[in-house]
Length: 197
Image 1 (cartoon, rainbow, N blue to C red):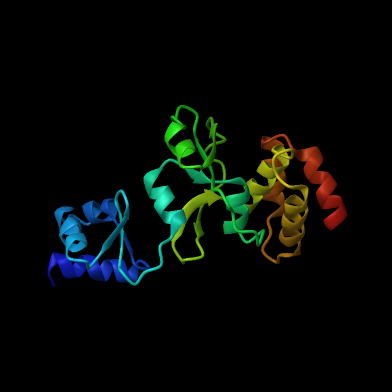
Image 2 (image 1 turned 90 degrees about the vertical axis):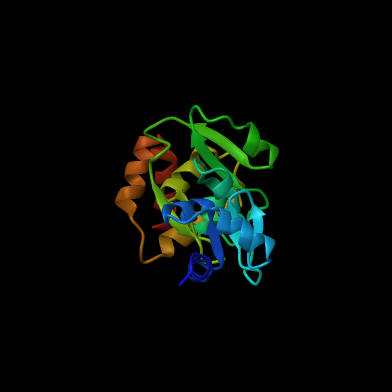
């Protein structure tokens, strides 16, 4: 099997998406991506991200590939964690404290900075509607975050998210309580849980 065939097969396995980073990690020349793009076997959707022509473009993946240090958060993470059915009109991402936010802000991303250990707290792989993996905050961390930003998150979204979470079989109340303690939203969390549990 030639490297060209390997890349196309790898893209098929990966929901029609392949990135330059994946190609380099596999030890294959990135020049093959340009060749496949020039011949129409792949389409370049953003810098370093290519898809098969028949593949659905996954904006979640494209943005995270452009901003690798960005973690999906707030309303975007609620959507990816299945805690809201409202598709985000704009993406929310958190970046490390020293990250320059001018690039993501120009693209319309709602972004903020966070210091360690809070930046890394609760990062997991989430599945996009297109079936691809991206990094975002877990349900428990996200629920605590929306309580911290109460003035910026629609109260109906907050209530619906907590109702959906507490109705789940797979919920982790001890982890939720621990994150609430670390993020200093215990009192607000208790108010929601007392009503819903």
